[in-house]
Image (spheres, one colour):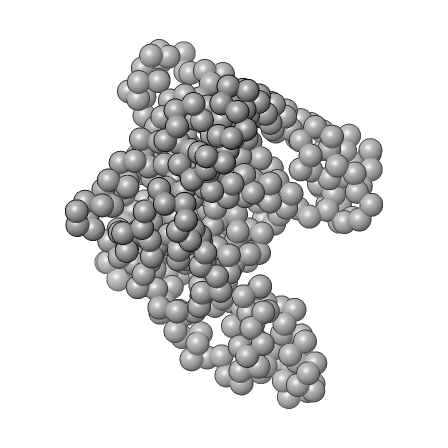
Length: 393
């Protein structure tokens, strides 16, 4: 089997798992009046009814009430357990906007717990040990896996650090249960890492999967093999691994965003060096710089201490441009949607092919808040897009 055949097989398996999941969603998701349930579940429909999508400019770390900045002495919402308030007054004032999402999380959590109890009752606790690594291959586990992902979807309607953290934990545990990830949940993971400021983890995650796909010989059934074990990879390295014909769109998009975050950090270091450098002692400058950058550079003192960041800034710009063109070639719908997302964030496609609008919509939903929470990121891509369009004239 050559690389193309291997990747096509992987894509078919991923798509089959996702289609199976979508087709099994509760009819409570509702079906348009002019569309029969049979057509809806058979895949004849192009999409499901629109969903809510909350655009975020930052993940909330403290009180969730609008304009409140309190971050200590908080109480947790007893129902969803992922939203915090500084007091009853703010919890009451926020209830109209929080109630619907809270209810969906509560319902999804109950559904997940019910499926877990049913699975343990019917198959025994041992299934979580003996079946670990190939869960989806066991038919009796699928309702449990679907219910768990439904909970993840509900959690991601709320833009708090706790909601993103809990959702990420569920996804990582699902990957441990099903190493080959037939459901395709790996596409959601790196964007959550980025939103939580864990850029190195996001880069390591994407690189591990990209190398496994390129290698072709990794046996997901062998649970003795290392899994997701890439650590502290060089996030400044060449992007060739992510710009090939068969690269995952989700991973390339997230790698692009990580590179942009590195670029803006280096630009910040360069400005601080030029403006403050001549006027403050070196140790104070290093301290200032360390607290104005993201996690990757903050943990790299050698980078902070460099006298001139400009060559590295130029290299990152070149890498970002390569990634831009790779994404444009893989799915020409993506960049216009990043700049003007509109209803794409609310769409619910039932299936997709590579390069399609439906694929764009899914990846956009998985990654958009990571973009919108990164200052200047969308502006950088708008500049590249305008240059691309000007060159095409």
